[in-house]
Image 1 (cartoon, rainbow, N blue to C red):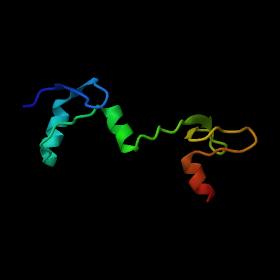
Image 2: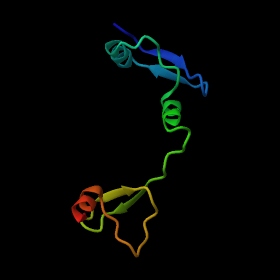
Image 3: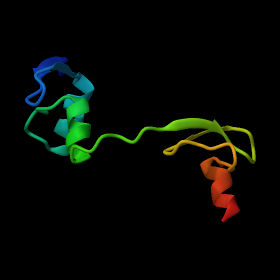
Image 4: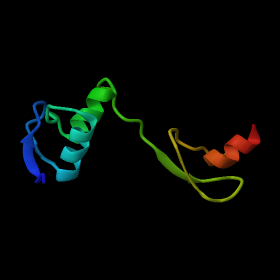
Amino acid sequence: MNQDKTLTCKDCGAEFIFTASEQDFYAEKGFTNEPQRCKPCRIARKNGGAPQKEMFTTRCASCGCEARVPFQPREDRPVYCSDCFSKQR
């Protein structure tokens, strides 16, 4: 049975936990090496160093539900949630 391990990120030097369930997953997939980077560094590396887009929260003009969009909403244009937007097409 695996136990949680504390590892050090090779990029930022922060310590992170390699949980027992993650170790089981790695073993199940046949991975032999432990992760070398913390989750934020893995995400940054995966995105090619590009910063994540800022998301804005607004209300859908159709159903009134909360919608998260990658642009600054303006008052003169309607903004739709993903469900209502696909219905508009």
